[in-house]
Every structure is written in structure tokens, then in C-alpha cells.
Length: 253
Image (cartoon, rainbow, N blue to C red):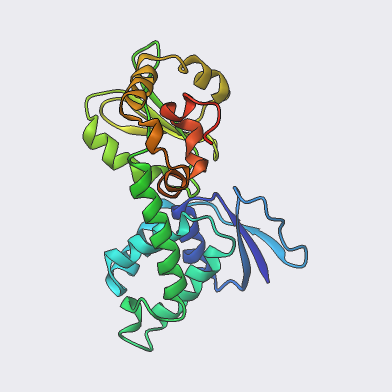
């Protein structure tokens, strides 16, 4: 039985699934590079490299057998980085491609799809919330920069929104939790990394955009109507670190 490793991307995972079918592999676990979980020592390690062609072929097969919406749901659930999510998706795909039940592929209440659907819903909820919590500062070269640390790996799902809103600007959104970001040069988004993210963050801490956010917050805030419990419900504490308006006070009581 194999312990399969891959590059942690969705296309990488689809390449794994493709090779499992092509080579008739006996898989016990699928282990992304980004995971800190130890591999099972009683399984044989097996590496599968990402093949864009294989990933695209499997995407077409899933869309044809189920629907593009199901493919999107699998992608969203995958980005949760939940332990074992690969094996859950694989179990669904195996039953879907078996074709025993023609209604199975689109049934969100099946034993295999229901947990995937619930995970995907949580991921999409964070995407929607994060769109309102990205704060840009302006770097010396004129590039707009934002640092985020989302619970899920949703950076790629945010790019389309900001590409549409700031189509002619240069900007970077950087996920410091996972150590990668996307740089948009006014035409195309490119994945990138920053060796010293703390230095970049410190450089932008006194930017005019940061000051504008803080001034706006101080203007609309009414001390007598502060409700910390409601604030934490609407705006989880884990996001405060990168919100300039929350840095006015060292601590929110």
C-alpha cells in the first residue's frame, strides 16, 4: 500500500488521482508537501509529479460526469487543507466514475459528498468574508501590498475579484501563513514568494492608506456603543492582526 506525496496544489492532487487510475495504484494515504503530518511508516512512499495535461483531462471528466459546479465544490473543499480531504474526494470520485447510480454524481446528500459539501461551504464563506478584510498599503515603488492569513488556502479564489476591481494597478496579496503570494502587474497574476515578509510589513506600517483606515475608524466609532462580543462574532479575532483600524488600540477589551 502506498503513501503518495504531491506538491499540495489542486492540479497536483488531480494528477495523483489520474495516476491512481492509470497505474491501478493501491493507495493508503495521500500526503501533500505542505502538510506537517508525518507519513505512515508502514506504507511505501510514492511521489507523483504534477501534470497539467492529466489534471485538465480529469477536470473535463468530472465536469462531464457530474457538472462544473461539482468540480468547483471539490476545488473549494480541497482548499480547506483538512487532514484526509484527499481521501474523501478520492472516495467520491471512485464511486462517481463507477457509474452504478446515474443520480449519484449530483447528489449533495450522499455519504461521500455531504462532508465535502459542508467543508466547501465553510471555505466559500471565508472567501466572501475575506473580500471585505483585505487592506492595501502602498509600497515605495507604487505597488499596493496586502498581507493576509486566512484559515483556508483561498488566495487563488480572491484574485478574480481584485483583478476586476484594480485591473490597471500593480498589487500583491500575500498569504504569510503559507508563504506565497500573487503579484499582479496590471495584466497578469503571477505566484511569488517573499523571503522576509516581516521587513516588508514593517515598511508599510505607516503608509497613508493605513492612516486613512485608522482615521475612518476613529471617525465612525462610538465608544459608548462598543460591543466586543458582537465584534468578535462578525469579525473573528484571527483577522485583526492585518486590519489597520484594529491597530489603533493595542488590545480590544
